[in-house]
Length: 410
Image (tube, rainbow, N blue to C red; front, side):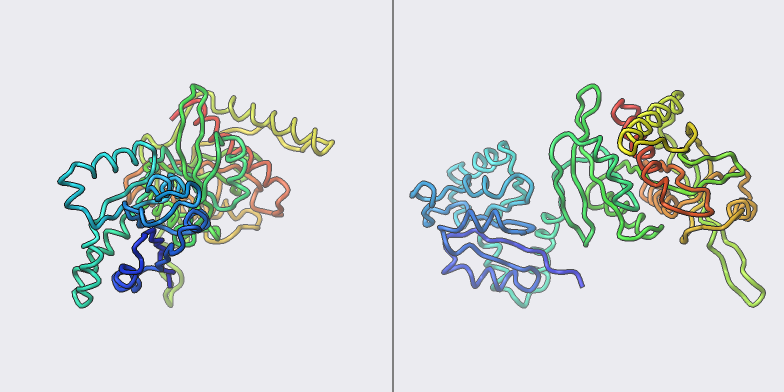
């Protein structure tokens, strides 16, 4: 069961209003309050609230920093610019009549605070009074839920990885400024900015799944689209390569089709395949004539760093970029010639690699009409598996994407 969202109420008239807040909100939210004016700022800064309800008039609170009546702007400053805020007042009619409300909200928004809406106190009071009116109560909850889920940061792209170790090389190179983290439905998202060569700032959001596989990757990708408005999703990571197609450790595979080959029907007569495939939307895949040159520079960069850190070289050949078919499995393959058998099963002669997520990413893109691109580097040849080349492959895939974005090849 999903835990309740947390609302922190900042109101200097809690003696008369607290019971109404509780009656209106407690069944749906975890509501906390700021009863002590001396501790208001500390409570706010230490809060993990998903939403703040802030009274516009806090004059009954004495500001501990100035020993004068508390101003709402000081409270907003303590909350910061990321968390959503709903301003509230019992004097809505007077504020509107005297033209005071619009300047207050405009000034708050111009300062960067995340002001989502304005409530008249009567909206809370009416829900408290109409506790038997489910439609009235649900309407308020829908409004509050929307404000909590709404993300104010427009994202230029999202990144999905199976594991943190596959994401970290991108984060190490791409970051321009700090990273903030938000948690939605137990998924940890990182928000950051990539600064391109021309100085353009790209806002992005990134997440790793709890487990490798089609289901987790598609859930995260779907959440990025529905909750954060992302319209372009990249996946970087590692995969297994098909040696008989000439694929080597470190080669970067950018699939133009991903085949989920395990689907089918099991009957008394055996297993009947029902193979499905998904593709990135046209225009979603970034192709460039100097792809191998970009990869070669990354190859030299990694080896130079490796030699410097380890005191020895890494036995790998210069990698290439492949745009071809990838198989997508729900299990790890550690068996000789298995990819050759899969290629025959799905009738894809040019199958060059296998992973556990690409189908989920592409299928999400097809269903939700967004651009998707998968970039995987070969860490093994699906036999005698080990993690020896995993850091190398993770580095190449992540930094290849970084170079495309840094030079604005999108």
